[in-house]
Structure formats: C-alpha cells, structure tokens
Amino acid sequence: MSENLGELTITRELPATPAVVFRAYTEPERFVRFWGPVGTHVPLDTVTIEPKVGGRYDSTMVIDATGDRYPLRGEITDIRPGELLAFQEEGVGLRSSLTLKDLGDGRTEAVLHQTDAPDFYCGPEARAGLNSSFDRLVEYLLDGS
Image 1 (cartoon, one colour):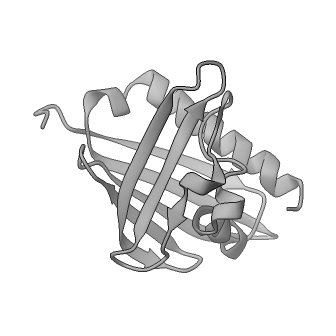
Image 2 (cartoon, helix red, strand yellow; image 1 turned 45 degrees about the horizontal axis):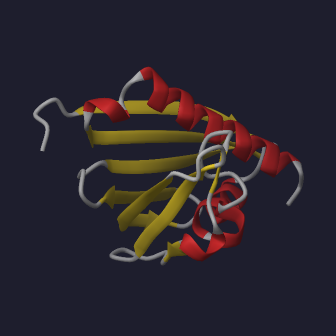
C-alpha cells in the first residue's frame, strides 16, 4: 500500500431532504441514476447495496466512450439512515463517509470525506469526478424522481 495516503473532503448543498438523499445512495435503482462522473454509467446488475454494517457496497462504473470498467467493492462500516453512510473500499483501503445534515426547506448539506486515499484518489481529476457525480445527483433530485 502507498505511503502517501491522503484525504479529500467535498461539501455540497443538495435540493432534497436527508432521507431522499440517503435513499439515492442506498437503493440500487436510484444509485445508478447519478453515480460516477458525466460520461459514465453504472449497470444496475453490477450494484449490490446491503444497507447494514458489514453489508456490501459494490458497483461497476463503465466509461461510455471506451467500455472500460471500474469495479468498486466495498463494505459498509457505519450507517445511520438519513444521516451517515460509511464504507471501506477493498484492495486500496480507501475509507469514505457521507454525512448528511438537514438544512430545512427540503435542502441537505452533504459532506463526503475520504481517508486512507492513495494519491490518485486525491488529485484534481478525482475531485472533478466526484463533483461531476454530485452534479448528476442534483439533476436527478431536481427531476423529482
């Protein structure tokens, strides 16, 4: 494992309640509507989300232009419906937590915090990809789906 492990935090305001945002991250049919940056998709048949501590958090992101596949295999390490989803990615050891805070008026502050992240997970491309995924989530939430 790399000795240059870092961390990354992204904070975004989302146009939905924490309960709705939480369901987007824990229900496969919703998850596939936004996960990954623009130019990617996640086939529903690659998603396994078991919303409990020790449950699976697996998916495969596919690059639309090339068909290249990027599997994510994770285990949920903490979960509080409407408040927190945390998992650790197998192989690289990356730990991710998504904390949701109710801002009122149907808005949520989402804080994505990643630790034990290899360098390539902390660079500008990774940050841009995560923000693109958040942008897709905002579009999905505004669609009222």
